[in-house]
Image (tube, rainbow, N blue to C red):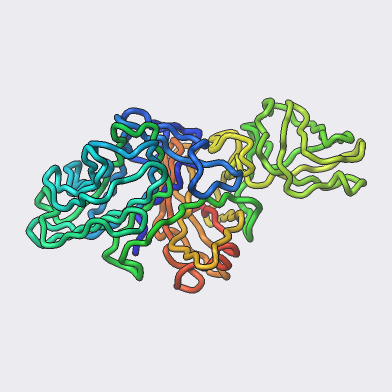
Length: 432
């Protein structure tokens, strides 16, 4: 198995909107303006903040993902919420350079069926897609002759299986993209827990069943902290504040200026240097700030002295989901020294007793901010083994998402375990 793309439901790029998600590289094309929400219906796993993230995709809305390479054997899975059983429309289309290869459709009574660009190749008259959350998986081997095959699972039950059919509408035995579409009769709809794999290689070459695509955000520094932290969009502040006093309600006063009100909300901060130990805090979220104060939820001792506040997790504002992420030039890390690495620990993953961690997708949000070419690599450090994404990445003048897919733990060259993943750290390496 090789994971090609995974999306939990816009959780890590919620603030961008559909058009912004396309220009940032999360998706390739959108039409109709799908909405990114954190108020989807219950029934799927909640995020770490207790909210339910999803993409609201209604009739007239589409999201398309395109790949550079083409693949002969693909499997896709996704959770879809229908307010009522869908009627007469197309849910999903595998495509080759924009031409539909195989798609999932529903008839006027909500029965799912498969077509090869409109020509029915497999159907079921006794199964109706119900309202509420459903999990769909579509596996296709693309062939131009009568040697193709396709299987459709609905809520982990195989409902359509066909072989000896034509599954390509072009001269290619492959697909290099797909489109998710809203259908009439069931608005509002929601889409999340989505993945797609190249099933021609690797250990996992069959359907995975109902999966959760979760997000674990960075929390604290890992084994390297060589990049410089930037706070509040103020040049030269780095990742520290000079603190001059604190009152009894957890309001700290700092001397730096140029930070806007509320700009630090959601960041975690550690404070050292005060004589009263209760005033020295470790990795607490900032709940409010003015241009010269910040507040944490802590009862403190009034004190006037000099201390230092160090910010944590500048690569991901909103770790406590009290801010907006990503925040671009408000908080980030930067570097210009070849070989420098900064990596970060992350929130812990807890799997159920029979849970399987199929893959880890390391997501970075990067731009270059000076003249000339700049290149970096994504880094995973596991058990003393340092993995990079394999090739230098040339950063652009605008923020883009980059994905390093790790189907195996670099330390063991085997399937990830929760223990191995929780011990691993992830970050970036300056190349040029």
